Amino acid sequence: MPRTIWSGAISFGLVNVPINVQSATEDHSVRFHQYHREDMGRVRVRKFCEIEDREVASAEIGKGYELTKTQVIPVTDEDLQNLPLPTAKAIEIVAFVPLESVDPIRIAEGYYLAPAQPVAAKPYKLLAEALGRSAKVAVAKYAWSGRERLGLLRVREGAIVLHAMRWPDEIRDPGELYPDPVELSDDEIDGALALMDTLTIEDLESEDFHDEYTEALEQIIEAKRQDKPLPEAPEPEEPGAVLDLMAALNESVQKAKASRGEGHADVHELPARKTARKTPAKKTAATKQPAAKKTGAGKSAAKKTTSRKPRRSA
Image (tube, helix red, strand yellow):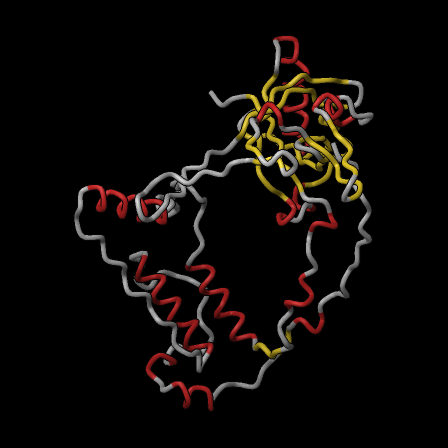
């Protein structure tokens, strides 16, 4: 069973739900340590006091805020536990919103919230049922790890999940990344939709979605352990220059269907470009129809600026 990383309560109006917070995800990445290459001796990071010039133990280390170069304000764990802040000991629900109104870029890691004691079972179930039936998610504020955070509460298979969220001013403006204005034809957009249809699946539970990087790394480690030749890396395909966008889209659709064994499965018909693969790229480009409509970043909404305000720290 996952360990509890925080205990407190969910504050829902006048209803308090005592909960324990547990991580909802697992990290299966291969971990490395640092070693001296000459003799493979372990390299460790040691903590030294700058004044006494000696290594100090963890029990001697505390927190402090550097007011000036010569003045440090000590802050203890007890200070942090007794902040004059309602979210220091509770996950305080402040609003309910439709899930589709939340930009996914703001959603971070997830945690399971478990009822902390038998008396919490009924209010926990009440909140879970209300969230499930409303088709909305709760927006909450809480204070962990030295800062106040924004969170999103939803229900997954009967359990309440807390997703950490980024504050609005933590999201960078993508305006500088906008491409130069370009012209796209209806035919090109329809071709892209055809490719999307070919690659559409029902869910993400397929065996195709697994960590191939970790598997390859484990093969390297095992080969070295057994003193065997390392597995050869496949030659990456060099992407060719796209001389004709329609021809590239058409070929992509055919490759996607072939990889799935679908043959000529029904998708959006590519508009009057089915011979593009047999036609030299330059000739096809010369016969391209005039663009029917323009789309591009030039019509993007004006950049929004968010004034940064200091947030309370826990």
